[in-house]
Length: 373
Image (tube, rainbow, N blue to C red):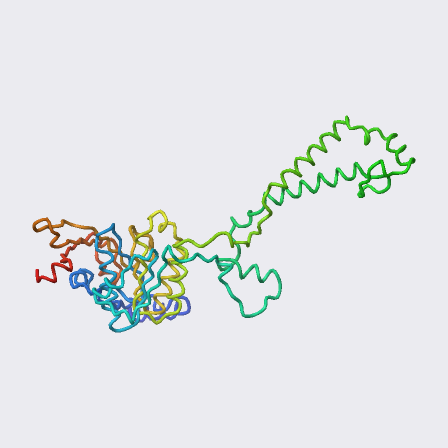
């Protein structure tokens, strides 16, 4: 008597239920919820907009339309909820944002301008609870979570070795010049008793300055004393007061705090003014943490940069470029923006869009819209 496929499938799934739930049943694919980008052409191009709870990237050079896409997304989201804009280089203009339709009262603008005073991380931390010991104070003064960085373990090693060699040579010299029976207490022969002077003269090795070993010891001790006089004092591995945060570090810290706080519909990180050599050095773990926080808070996290830097953490990557610039009597009449999708993970497994799709649209400057062109 044969066993039907349905019964066999049910038995196999029951055996593997503890390890692999529904091992032979197809997983139901659900389309992600999308948030409109504020640009009708781009919404149609992305099948509805940017996915909620994910990390998206808009890249491109200057005048490619990346900032316009970010402002359009903020304009469509600030009408319904609260948004955040982390401006790494203080390049955003509130008047331009208001002209694009952004509701400024619903926008948190975090800016890092060159006029702001750079506060070291150790000096910026204020604790309301008294510290128990020095070890706890060192842990709180570190600019990052967890243990110290491997490079920080070697800071101050050279001055410490210099001081150790100086102390060693100094102790050796003092032992050679000490009085009999008290080698660690140096005393000149002019203050010693006649017996001690006679003993010192009897030991020609310690009295004769022409002894090569004694000359080398004194020369080493004098060199170590001179080096210790000009060498900077040893710096602890946890002393970061002299190393201020960079603009990128402060922007990433602010982004982490905003995403972890939650409650924002859209969070835009503008690092487009920074060099790709800096942005591409951001660790993958940082982007993964941002993507996880955006997913938990159901936020659209948009990164504006010159080149893709989030790697596999990005669910959607749009590369922008500038097209032709038509002019009427020497005056710029409109601008053409070209967008190409290099990655899109906004659909089921069998419904992914192939990368390489291109679209374009035109926008008119403010002075042309004012005259009705």
